[in-house]
Length: 284
Image (tube, rainbow, N blue to C red; front, side, top):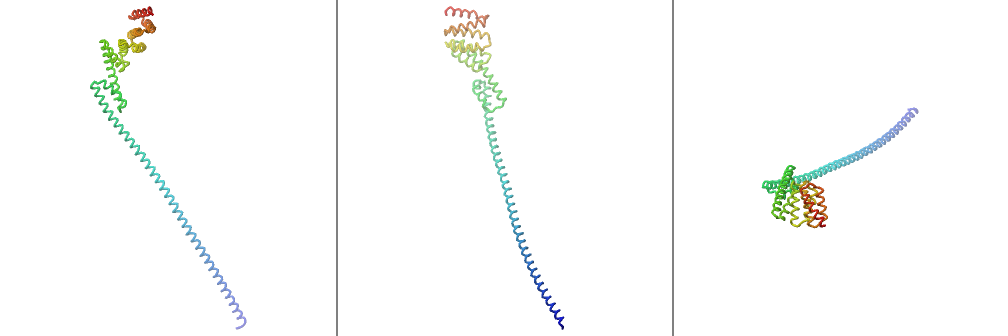
């Protein structure tokens, strides 16, 4: 083997060593890269895990919050519905109570109405008029009220007329105290009846007969201002003058008689009025 071959062999050995060293370096570098990649992969997987856990927790928390909000809303709705139902039940109970009260009032009104009808059928007018004010407090229909009011007017008119005639009979018999009671009752029962003016005049006459001229004058003053009957006005004015003369109210009597002569110059009573006025003028 010559020197050239040895040099060639040495060169190949050196190159093999260099290649081996490079291979080892490359292997070490590759191993380091693999470790670095594995480490990054582990970190990535760890981040993914934590992100997944965080996302899961966030999702769970959001779901819990939404569920809580939904449950709260449902609870509020149930509570509101329960409150509305309670209010409605209370209103219904109140309405039922009102209906029961109305039915009770209606039943009581029907009983009172039946009793009033019985009084009318039995011709007990005074008892009927005594009970009639209760009609305003009864639970009656408009027709029933109208019937009772009309019956009350009729009963009052008939009793007034009866009291008037009774008072006239008492006055004719000289029972003036009883006459005043009956005539006053006639006027109290119906103050605007056709016989009211005559009843007032007869009442004044009865008071004068009882020496109650002041009461008679009070009645006659109103009668002479309100009566529409000329005959009653004439008699009432002359009676007023008589009562004033009884009380020695000469000036008032003169004025009343002069007023009589001015208002009723053609009255058959004008001669009597002139005579009384002349007597007063002579004495006073």
